[in-house]
Image (cartoon, helix red, strand yellow):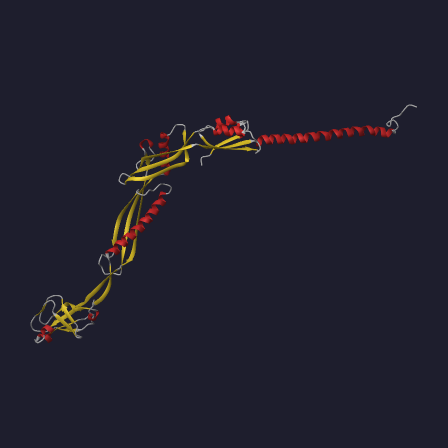
Length: 399
């Protein structure tokens, strides 16, 4: 009997279903194989592209510098509005401020004072003849206080005159109330009772003791204190108004407009008041103009291939002469800076691209214009500079 296969003995309905089942299995097997190959390929491609994009070199270079210094002069001129470097001149601005101040001060002087009381007596002449009373004629009050007349008077008969008198001695005990007065010089004559005096107000001014006095030093200290206070205030206002412009010592002129005190030296007073008015004028200029002039001076003295290290530039101005009539100041300048030879960074990129880290360091370190080099590679494990110069970043460190 001829041999039969497993397929041949299956029922007819199973024969029809078996073939499609094999096809399905074959397709499924092919689909799984494609994904397993594509996904790793895609991952590897992304990894390679990302790696190439991440590869880069950062190079920091410190140029070799040398210090240069110069001393020169420049004119800050209020008559120009723009710098004229060929004539060593920069613009100046005129700034004016005016201020006043007054203040009360205490007198520190002390003197011994002896004052005689003074006042006025009305002298009556009830005699039938005129009565002449010479200066220093004595008058005695009802309580026995002696006063003397300060002037010669002639009192007509039947009339009276007011006479100025002064106590014979200093002291407050002569500050007496209104009183009647006799004239002892007429004692023993009929005129003694007919000629007499009478005061209608108290005698004043009798004193013995210490009094305050304005000393010369008091006035000088007061004026100095006001001057310093006012100048300090004016300087602050000038600096505030100047803003970013330079205001140097020696470029300010102060003029005293008015200076007076309520008391003079030697006056008896416990205190006094002083008044002061000052006008301040300043010539100011821009720091940027000064620095631009300094760069111009340096550039004329260094090699054409050298560059100024901006952070090192120092310009120290001093006022040599200020002329407020012509609105100009002569400035002495001390200029100092570091300069370095210009470095072509693109040339350096071309020289080191594709080279090893060690070779690149040796190459860059061999340039006389370079003081120090620092190289960073990304990723960090790389030991070669990228071949693509766009992946190389070089910057100068000028700090």
